[in-house]
Amino acid sequence: MMRTFLYLLMLTLSLTIIHQMIILAYSGDNLSEIDSLVSSIMKDLEYLESREVNVSSLIQRVNEDIKGLEKDPGNATYIKDLESIRDEIKALKSDAENIYIINNIIRYSTAVGIGLVPVAVYILLPRIYLYIWYRTRRRWIVQVRK
Image (cartoon, one colour):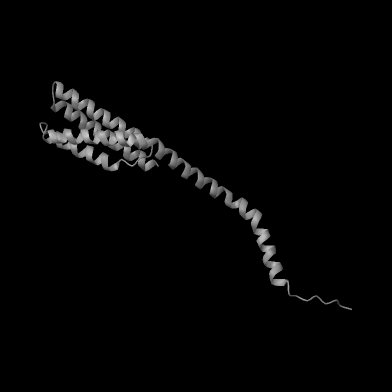
């Protein structure tokens, strides 16, 4: 969990630095469009990551597009790819709550299952032991000594 948080923090910082470099490279209306696009993508990616949705491939694509815009600011293919990423994020956001609920159900069910093991052993182990003991000794013949 901590590793994921550190990975997300490093990614956010690197994307912010690259984003600021792109802002310096652009000017005018194009700057505000790209700024709002990248900002909304980063905000949505952080939300999806907090909801435990696997967005690592989208993060890599955004990183590649931002690096591409840094090298070639006039290339519209990177901006189109960022817009397609934004559309994919919108689709993922609709399923994010369901994924979060399912992950929590699995997590808590596992914890309850592990917590019930000692109770089950406490209740069932003596019964199993007695059953086996009676089964192995049921043919014994008891003789009375005089």
